Image (cartoon, rainbow, N blue to C red):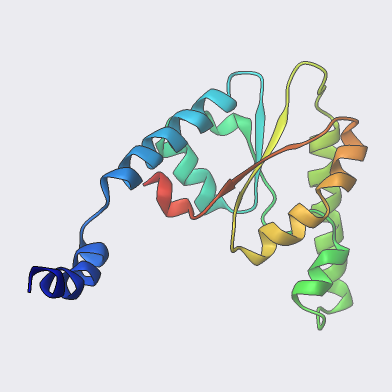
Length: 153
């Protein structure tokens, strides 16, 4: 009878009560990000909302590079094949500025870490082209996968 009751209540508890292990994982995740993004390293993220989450855990916003979408303008056509030519030209300028900002850094004594959310489509596009960016800066880009940005809250 207890086993039957347990099986009926387990879904309710798992939905409304946080598992103690997830709290430990969140703390470990925050500590890992804070340690990784020391004063020399930069993080590449795809959205301003992610920047806010990282600022809230104590990351210096000057160490965050926000792409606001894919890094390379061709990838915008993957997101929306119906983009007008004028819009594509604006996007190309934005991407060029972003790439130049990244390339202008001296990467000998610091790392670029791409922090991405596992199920995010834009992040997947960036991740697929991360080797192209590595070639541009002459250094391997480290990656850090998050299940969800909510894990930092």
